[in-house]
Image 1 (cartoon, one colour):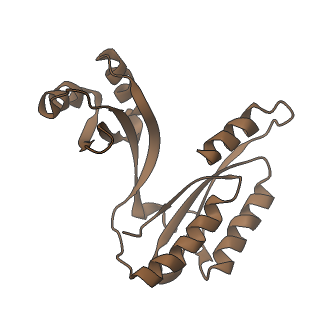
Image 2 (tube, helix red, strand yellow):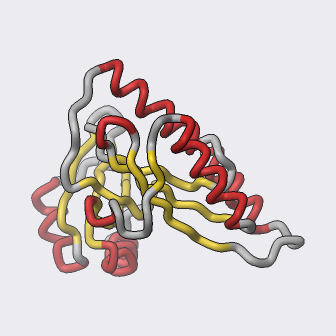
Length: 177
């Protein structure tokens, strides 16, 4: 939430004009692929911060395309589950490009996944059916994940947390299970 608020504040600041979206790729310890999405007004500062985070946590910053192929771009929507019958809902939304539907019973939400290119179709389809969208985002889903021990997970999480603490970083995706 803090990252989103900082990004909105930066984007609405009238003194700033040139914003640049950058994606950085690399590997954390234990072969975990990391993909970092950033929004910055100073790409030199951002790449230095990302490189420093990787170096301090024994990772390595890679070149463009070095880990992107390990992730699939998907759109994700969350709506209130209410009294929706999942089978009927799936049949009603399949024409919009919906590929997968899950239900989160704890939050009483339906989570909908589709191809990156179908974001607009799915959004307008859900609105057409009268569903209020609680959350919508573009995700990078790892094609394969790697299981780590608790201690190894902590080491990788240090890098992830360090990256997420950077003001320019919007999202961090990884292949850790």
